[in-house]
Amino acid sequence: MKKEQKAADNPAAFERSSCPITNVLDLFGDKWTLLVIRDLVLGKRRYQELIVSPEKIASNILADRLKKLEDAGIITRQAYQQKPARYEYRLTQKGEELQPILEAIITWGLKYYPGTTIFPRIERY
Image 1 (cartoon, rainbow, N blue to C red):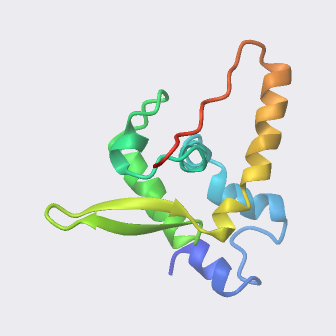
Image 2: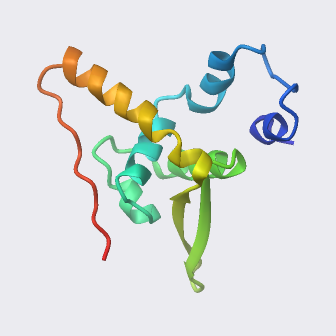
Image 3: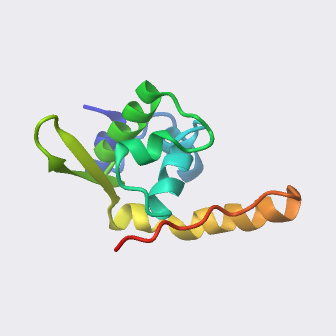
């Protein structure tokens, strides 16, 4: 059983410690996962939209992070095409609740990293 699922099923099943920061970093502590969540918050839904982000995430890493986030209940995927199989990814309620955290990181980054900019939200019709 994956550690994210194990922790979700049994909150007392911690990998390293019961510290909430440790457990959050076990899920989000790499350099890609929060960027994938950022793009989903901004409205990207499909793999091809996510792969073209300016940070140039490798396709195998993107696939791994999407699976990790799905296993943790942060995102869901739904097929929009059968042959070949293609999926749209959406934040769950659990994932949506990360938005204020991203906003706090943005505020801090804008303050301490002059010249950074906020990416625009993608409008869906």
